[in-house]
Image (tube, rainbow, N blue to C red; front, side, top):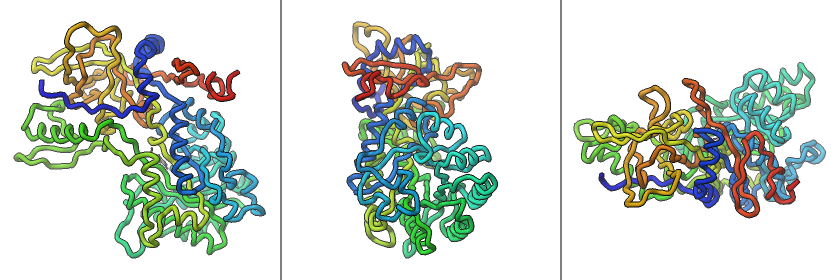
Amino acid sequence: MSDPLYLAPRLESRPAALLDSPVFLHSLVAALGSPLNVVLPDQMADNVRRFQDVYARHRLAGRICFAHKANRSSALVRRLAAISAPANGPAAHSPAAHSPATHSPAASGASSAGASVGIDVASLGELQHALGCGFTPERITATGPKDPAFLWLAARTGVTVGTDSAGELTALAALVERHDLPRVRVMPRLSEFTAPGTRTLTRRSRFGTPADEADALLDLVEKHPGSLELTGVSYHLDTMSLAEKAVALEGCVRVLDDCRRRGLRPRAVDIGGGFGVDYLADGAQWEAYTTELTRALLGRRPPLTWEGHGYGLRAENGTLRGALGVYPGHRPVAGPRYLDELLGQAAPSLGRPLATLLLENLYDLHAEPGRALTDQCGITLAEVLEVRATAAGERLVRIAANARDVGLEDHGLLVDPVLVPRGAPDDGVERPVGVYILGNLCLESDLISRRTVFLPRAPRPGDLLAFVNTAGYFMDFTADHAMRQPVARKAAVHQDAAGAWRWCLDEQYWPHLTADEPGGAL
Ligand SMILES: *Cc1c(COP(=O)(O)O)cnc(C)c1O
């Protein structure tokens, strides 16, 4: 075999310690079956703190809202709900500060930096779940296009509504008026921004209202002063480009200035999610792998993919066409660091750093990280069922899970699983192997990896493959009951005061019941 081309996952100490506990992991799978999703709620709390640190560094106040859609877990959401606002936190978010008598820009909290923790829900089910996990309405934002029941429960419970369109804003006002509900806080979502004097614009989106139609939205809000309270505006862009996001953020500040000219009292800009995750431990491995992948597709080295799969690339007469359609697995500027860099960007036409622009106006900053808050928070375990070789010499590893249980391939994320052996390794030399990982569906396309995955030694039936960092979109977003194969159960794990791993089913987890929670033991 040619030299192994590893794509080792980036592992922080907590998930690394978990993977270092093979007896514990095997006992979990023995009890709960394969596949099995394991979530680490305490890691989520650490991730929140890192985002809060960025707010503090820029002296900004506001809220970090977990975009629930990244994971269905109850444990993760309950853990977040248990985090209290920072002591010097944003006074603006206490209900009292929302009354007209006490609210002024100075009271909006920008002078006392700190970010509280909220949640962004995008369906009726997510809203019900967030409420049931302990989030009170003033900490919840409802985003995305809404069906009537979702809009009703959002209005009835008094969560902030990130309205998606003028139509939704009208429907919301009608709902409030018809049922005599309290005034609802709204943060209309905008899209398709341009920056005066520059050529950068943001891409088109099926969501939100184009920024140049914001005036019509503000007219609508002004028509319903008794039912709608505009507390800010929002965007969420499907891009990694800092330049585009800078245009959008500045565009939102301009709209808020218009709001103030009209006598409205906006307090916040919501910049959505999309902060990203760095999945790989080693950038050099990523460079080497993608280089060899293109060589393989050009026929200059043995194949690295199943049936010549090219991840968007194809060879035509000795040159490569198309574009590599994979997630940039090595992404050093991700998560809180991405937010930090965005806030340090100069506003495209006003020139000052974006954080300064927010501070000058005493605007709060709301962010909605999904993937980035779940970084290092989950692992998907699957048992190896069979290892065999094809006539062509390819080594196939079939596991008790399918491509919907481990959505890495579907999202174009190339990262190696970690082998968790069952017993002690055999004596003798263990050699690296390249394998294809197959799922448990009777379907040609059910491959967990369409690429050769290199492992330090050949797996054996009964070993586990641990897919690391799956909590953001990869563990339960697409899982279903195809062929009546079991959908993974979810276990929440934490380390007790002595460092021993403890577990419970995800739905049994309540943060105050874990013994090592400060002041939380029963
Ligand atoms: C999906 C989504 C997010 C989260 O995006 P990530 O890339 O997971 O951070 C935030 N806000 C809205 C409105 C979304 O639709």
